[in-house]
Length: 187
Length: 293
Image (cartoon, rainbow over all chains, first blue to last red; front, side):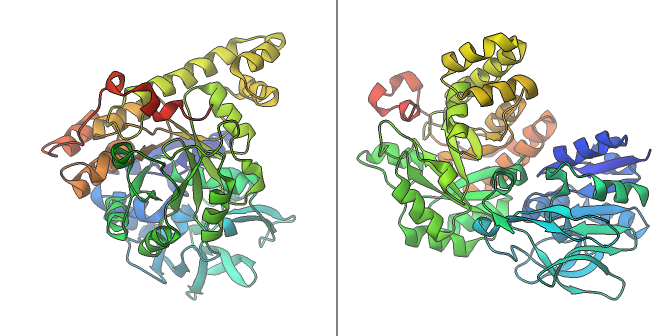
């Protein structure tokens, strides 16, 4: 099994680590460049994307992360992780990796009162996936190399570009590990 | 599509873990908090230290204040209502705040009852001094718990006491036999089903933050080391001599609580922390943690 890291600066990194451990992966919490060097793939968890972005910059992880992903390290971002990997956000300024060729709208469904659960059809899955959307973003523009794997009311909420996977929902908060498994199989 | 489920209410708190939630009273303060890396802000009319000083009845903030702060930042905005004051809570829900704090820092509106939080789509956070109190609030529908501590004092001792109490009682619960759980529920004054659940899992079913008296980066690191999931800082930031500096330092110490070199680095030359209060110098009637049950 591969060594998979979870960026552990802020957010629900523990939930991702638990899923990965359950699937038999060797896991690492990643907070430093040294820890990043030890992993074959990386999950960027849910959390506050502005907070995670600021930490990545302050602790010198922005360029190393960008370079690793450019050089083919598989990466999966959930919610804040999806935003952080994007090329641009529709509003405001915040540090972004720019590895994933999409424009993302933050809090696209609204505030917390509009957070919701919905069963989701995902390309390649034979039954619906329990989608947990919390102040979730969606993709407003996707580049030519980006495959849309799932949508809600026409808005892309899960995408893949080569070895980069991103979802605006939180599989780590459910008991369904199919997306994590799909990610691990791509390593 | 289902809104307001347990999973999305508790889930937002999961996203705030490892972060700092800061009390703010203006849009400018909210921007300073966001810039420093806060994961959320608590929109207030006055910080607890000023509420303590002002005396009188402390109420929900003016909706104009809440909206001003909502417009200033993209991170979640929380706001406080009085214990038991479900009409204030409905107003905050209508304003679209992301979390409602049913808070002992404001003057209680009901001496017997807390709000039925299941009735809301908006999630609630509530304070607790011990496990029984935490489970009563969760039983009423709270989706997040925080220690009460003693707000507005800049003194962390009560938050430490409350967190240690929750941890000790949790540990004890996991050691009990099945046949002891009903009397444990009676002694804790907690719902039996939750007591059974904790007996199995050994942990609270919701996120638990520290609050009440956190004033320095080392205070935040201490609370994280005691096992909280994140930190509320009330008066500690905007009553210090350097709010942007304190805000950023406390955020970094919360993430790197287990790395004393980082905590040392961010604490260096920070300037004066907020003025502190000794707990036993506070008249019993002015102790905020005693409000609610």
